[in-house]
Amino acid sequence: MEYMLRNWYFFVWLSGDHIVEQHVHNLDVVNWAIGSPPVEALAVGGRQWRVEPQFGNIYDHFAVRYRYRNGAVVVSMARQIDNTQPLVAESVIGTKGRASAGRIDGQNSWKWEGPNPNPYEQEHAGLIASIRSGNPLNEGRQVAEATLTAIIGRMSAYSGQAVSWDFAMNESQLDLTPPEIKAGGYKLGPAPKMPPPASGNAELT
Image 1 (tube, rainbow, N blue to C red):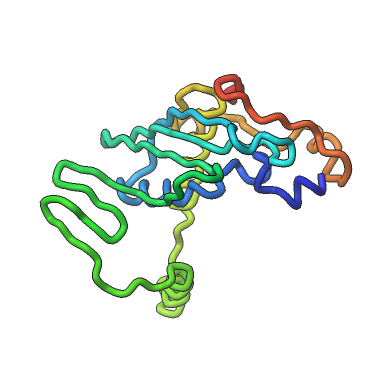
Image 2 (cartoon, rainbow, N blue to C red; image 1 turned 180 degrees about the vertical axis):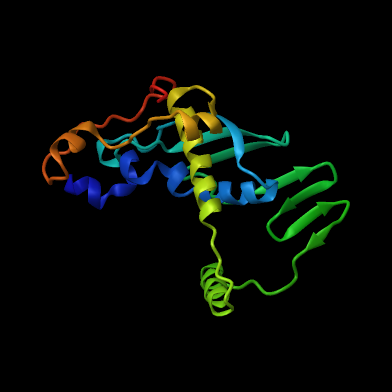
């Protein structure tokens, strides 16, 4: 149990898998660009690099097709595999061009020419300024929607089935807490066996 707590990232019940822990930020940007969360996810995923027991039971790659209510389709890919091309980015393609962070190519071409501040400093500066102005930022809804966007992608990859937003919100009874831990309490000692989900074989609950 202590190993799990110290290596929480590699265990689904603690991190949610890397699509929820890390890739959620990219999904948040996409939801913001489209203006709403998706209605459905259909995904694949698996483990091909981090397969040893010390890497817990999370996947090392996901690919998800999200469908949105307005007809938009998003293809989302995430991997954590050594010696592969690193890329963390979003690109939106429409009828009049293509947009990515700081650039638009197409009918209304544009490129950001201003300063490039540290984003981690900027997010704190923006939050503090909003509080001081009396208009504090509250992005709780966006955070929750981005998180569930990632979760339905993970649920689909594990189960091999399309997962709808409505199912996750209104029907799912999913509880990632290991039964042994719920039964015996949170005690240090030998960790319960937690094999990674076999893509397409996990029960959709």
